[in-house]
Image (cartoon, rainbow, N blue to C red; front, side):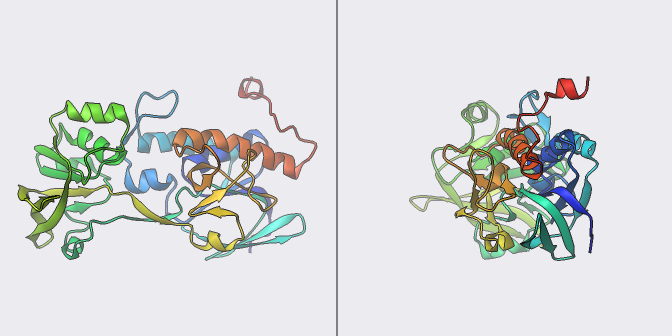
Length: 327
């Protein structure tokens, strides 16, 4: 048991959690980060390290892995204790602090900030029984190495930002790229969709994958079908499925937090209904909430500043600007 009580324990080592660590350091708080994954960076590193991010201020575009590397460097300003591969299970209050139980130990903390993104996640699959035969070889739910697609025939499934972004990124790497979407309209950003339509990517809408062909873990083709059942076969070396993720907050659902489906409800201070427990980023919901990395980075200082005031009522909620701190 770690008997040292830290000021704030951040559960979730993705972008919002990492920026929260830095900001807590700015407020001279002691920090601990706990994440169930074996590395920092959350979903960006787990699924999309080589994907470009376009909607973070100051970066016209930046690779996810480079963005996370910058955030990790920045987070270390607070000299946080980092605990990886450990899942938060339960929490109880003990006087002026919480006892946080994980699957591997106990942690003591004055406040808790939940930045666990969408929680534990699993990719949403096509739903074909043969799908499992190719997973990890030529069927992918995330991409960690773009080089494996060089000069290959690639089919990307989905209509959101990830599917469109991957298709555009692979345009000049793969021999050819086909994007298959089950609907006519895309949910990706309008600018990306316009770029897609002007690209070399072969776009097939209102079609779904009916069958996957191949052997020994190597896909050789897929069969598409439209709404009328008309079929079409495509030669394929690699299939990328971007249907999103099935997420679960797991044990957090048993904490007594006020929830809206898989999101935690917070007020304008990023406070949950449990005093001393805050939340920020994609894990939260409130009226008007938009789930973007940029929004989570903005919510992080709000949560940290109010956590600081909770620990020390004499502390200012509105802090000094960074130009004053570092000058």
